Image 1 (spheres, rainbow, N blue to C red):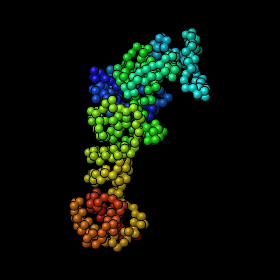
Image 2 (cartoon, helix red, strand yellow):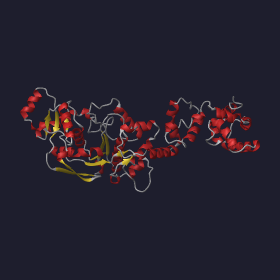
Image 3 (cartoon, one colour):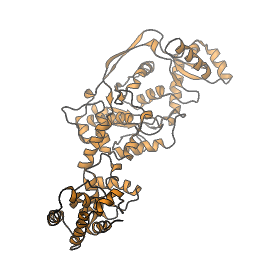
Image 4 (tube, helix red, strand yellow):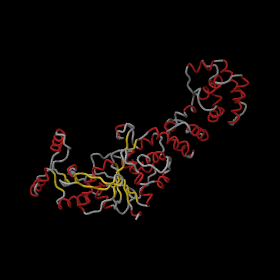
Length: 479
């Protein structure tokens, strides 16, 4: 049975992939992999007014970069394609006509102006805005006459006027809606394209989708969808509506409140491993207190029964903590390769592989996202700039003694190990009789550009002897 389970992720190409959409995709993916089912990608591109050029390509690229492989969809055609709804319009028209013939849908000729006026009046009267059903009363001859005149129309679903509908949600269990709260949904728009509601029901049926896992915002649409299944005499899939993603102030996480696109996070240097791990925990909890999981481990742990009903807070501090962990603990070569882009964009020369590796080894311990790795690495490139206060420190006799001593000692050999540098630190401090911050502050500042920072051995190990000597010479008798 489990091998027959089919789930789908069905985004609209209206921009970048939102983190909420990533969570929907991830939970569908995890469930399919857990039970040995199929994960289908379907592009719901029938709203041409909101279509954004290039967004499909961006979506496919982002899913690939994040590591979610689908079994059927664009570029992976299966037996239930095509997987772009814009290529399936004849199917939707056929089923819309069937609903008309069954008397459960009707032509609506109301203009946008009339609908806007209707909505304003309802809001003024403190009523829920919905279509008043005036075109339900049109006779067949009146409908044909209007069509003959070339009047624009949509096709609406004829929702029952009385009673209620009760359905079972895998997360919320029994849910009941009175029919008078449900609008006569538009199924086919005047441009000949279907709305989401008709297209998603038709496609879920034809693509044999067994489980619909999607956001809570679609819960109020379920009565319309189940009514369509009923009038088509089709078996509906099982449904689960995920909790909302929230800002820390408990408002809904939205595009208007900052960067919430997956691509934005990737560009800022959040790792795919982090995003998958972090997003998985936004509404789902594993057994025990463990928080760090690979994608493979998430598949093993995942269960629909452990999804929460309550909204999940998107905690950027926790995301940063988790990303810092992955940057520090994933293989060094992986972090080295993922960091290259940021150095190239900053115009920094990383052709010396040995030096670059040492820089990443140092910097990855100090950042929470990779675009910050440049700030932790700039001091190892080019010339340092010093303030007047820095120069006053350099001009002190004790500072000049330190610089001259270190220039002489470092020039005695070409290669220095960390242990040898540490021994030189101890030896020079004792021989010069300069200790504590009087010793470390000027030396570290001259080499690193800051009086606070890593051990002298780490700085010189990254700079190399020649650059270290050059920087110390630049601080001799500063003007």
